Length: 91
Image (cartoon, rainbow, N blue to C red; front, side):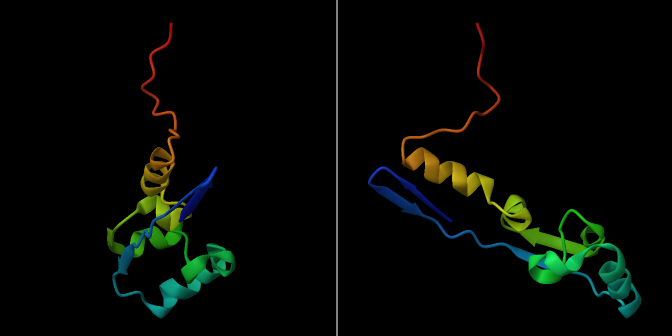
């Protein structure tokens, strides 16, 4: 991922490995029929039917979904920007 802010360019690679258990042809057909796999990178959605086949995941869960949030927040921080953490105190 990359962030360009003012004259600063920050780049970071986020790699995630997703391992599936063995999947039967019947399970594959079911996913193809009911999980709208044709518009997905890797032909599955980690939050969809295929999640039941995930044996383990190493890396960024949010990256598998589309945007590695931890890494993105770190890049923004390097540029002097921050995201709300939900822990701000009001008043």
